[in-house]
Length: 308
Image (cartoon, rainbow, N blue to C red; front, side, top):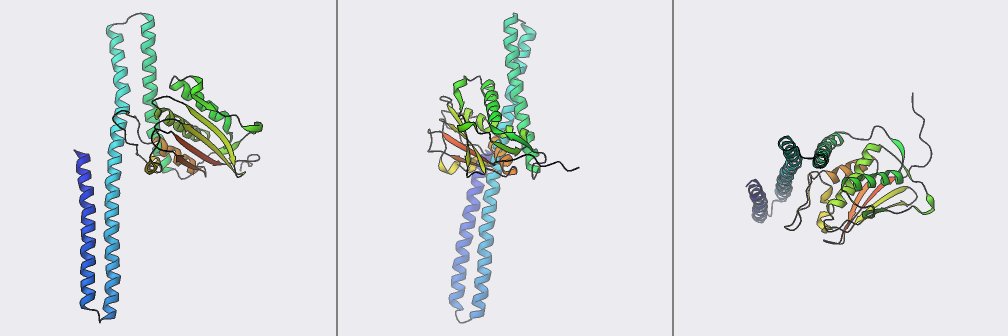
């Protein structure tokens, strides 16, 4: 009901803006036609008319953006509620089962493992929301250290394989030619969060089979580029920039329902920008996978001395 109401409001404000603009144009042309000899008044009329049109256009744009923002926030609240409620309900169910029917030791251990996974999922959702709030208020990274990217990416891959119970060949990391060691100056916790979100996103949007390839390379001798490619659902051209907005989620179809909060890629973009880098997504279309390229400044040399 709320979604239909907001769509109606958006259509109303767009129609209102177009109609008011058309009326203003007609009135202005008519006014100039009847007062064509009064040049000074004509010029004043043109200026006032331009201001009026600009105001109408800006008003319409702001209203439409506000409606869209409210829609994304509603979607986020529903997604977070689901992500919080589902593991809590699952844990409660297994606790009640253990209380009423203790069962044998093997069954209890299986229940404990499931509850542990649900609690990890619950904790991950809470941490994502808290991290988004923290990064949104922080202008730049306070503490940075010299980090070698290859071991960090390898460790993140291992974490994702364990988290999603995937075989080793599901996610591969290409060796760096010549055994070159690539370093960046970054906050390791933030950078780990960004890489894990990209990998989790690639896993989540590959429902038909997970084949993810990671690659590290140097660009123009000054940048390190981490590429993460999957063979999943892919993206339409209009989605490539929207996916990095706060609360935005790619619409699901009837065959595939993707869960999430709409904050993962927003966190990635915020973290990368605070480190002086950039993030870019590309896809050949739906069903053809997607590639994310995370670019950070290459760090060469030793850390600067600490100021007393």
